[in-house]
Amino acid sequence: MSHPAGQESRVHAVLDDLSIELPSWGFADTGTRFGKFVQPGAAIDFNDKLADAAEVHRLTGCCPRIALHVLWDLQSEQSAEDVKSNTRQHGLQIGSMNPNLFQDQEYRFGSLCHADAAVGQRAMQHCIESIQLGQQLGSKVVTLWLADGTNYPGQDSIRRRKRQLSDCLRQLHEHLAADQTFLIEYKPFEPAFYHTDIADWGMSMSLARTMGSQAKVLVDTGHHYQSQNIEQIVAWLLDEGMLGGFHFNDRRYADDDLTLGAIDPYQIFRIFCEILSYAHDAGQTPRIEYMVDQSHNLKPKIEAMIQTVLTAQELAAKAALVDFHFLTERQSAHDLVECERHLKQAFFTDVTDLLAGWRTKKGITADPLTTYRESGHAEQIAAERTQRRRELGIVAGGTYA
Ligand code: RM4
Ligand code: MN
Ligand code: MN
Image (cartoon, rainbow, N blue to C red; front, side, top):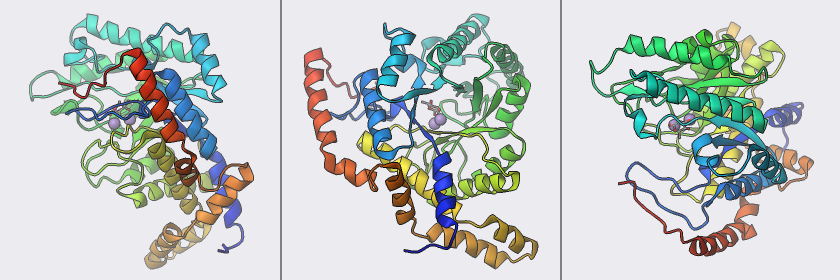
């Protein structure tokens, strides 16, 4: 298929800039709140997670970093130096550090927002340790997803909790190294069902501004109410200089953690359009952390991750077909029909050959998902890990109850 002049280089430049971070937790057995479906090929330990992320990077060429969930990945005897060199041996770097303030019994009524100072202190200590671990591991990003909130009207003072949270964040900012960014995630509900202490992007932005210059907002694409206009949030955050990054996934009802673009690829395309439109106006690509936040309990994990990464690339490539100069000109003429048609034409253009061309240029397979499915790798790790589980005496537990 032939594309108009300049399109190929635009698409390739966008792909060159699109580096996607993989979540360690996306390779291990996880489940829903009702139970867990185990997979023979799931990662057993941290080393397996590194190996799986490395496999995705090897095939896609755009996932050099792995995000860590501090309590899930770094509780072994391994020293920071070991973790670092292990990661390097797999050809990867450590990406974002994700503190965990949601699973300990102490956090039943909150962590940083808890009324009891001792619990707040414990949460602070964990965040400080996560920041310091990040420094030792060469990570540049700390992300905070705060599960704090209440279940019942009148349960606690929303304003006290907000002030306390601001104080905590201000203190945490002092622990950041100059090259560390602190990203504040928001989520409207779950696990709290009446109010969540950081419920939307405005609250995240307000907290980030209070916290300090290295704090920004993290947009998890699955953390919005039904039909919310996420690209508008992205446009505002870009304009305010407050967009730090994304957690990629898709949703139909709530925080479903489905693979990116599975339900609404046009939404993700529109987000990329806002980013590229900003880059066009500003004359430079904004620094954004693109991170996947998915744990697949039905799909095979490595395949699901490759599918996600390819989807992100495909939708970014389609957005790169938009001619923002032309669009701006049509906007000034109030030519609504052409403006919409221009976006739709880009969205519906088949970019398979443009993506394949970029991959061939990089010396990787033109079709990573098919190559993986035909490689036998999934069967091989399933056999090896089944055997290892047996040797280690690991019995697959399928319930959270
Ligand atoms: C949350 C949120 C966080 C993730 C946890 C496991 O819903 O998306 O980013 O770390 O899940
Ligand atoms: Mn997230
Ligand atoms: Mn989530």
